Image (cartoon, rainbow, N blue to C red):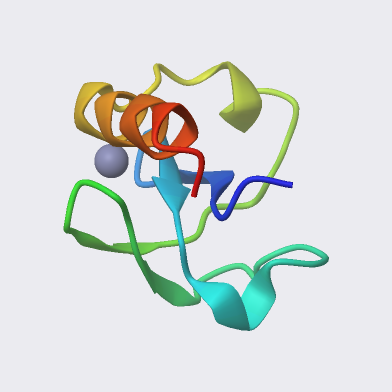
Amino acid sequence: MHPFRWTPAEGKRHATTDRRRLTGRYPVSEQIETLCGQLVEVAEPSELAWLWETCVSCNESAHLLVASGS
Ligand SMILES: [Zn+2]
């Protein structure tokens, strides 16, 4: 398992390494720190929310994490 998860927040899909919640879902409205360095509020993980555009910065960071094998 990779040390980050994707979650819809504030209109995009962000990745986070917030370890408090690596299992299960993030509670809606919880503030999490994303790989792109923002504090965002977790959105309702509806079907539509999962179709939001991926945060480019989070995507790059996630690729680096996977490539580094951490
Ligand atoms: Zn992001």
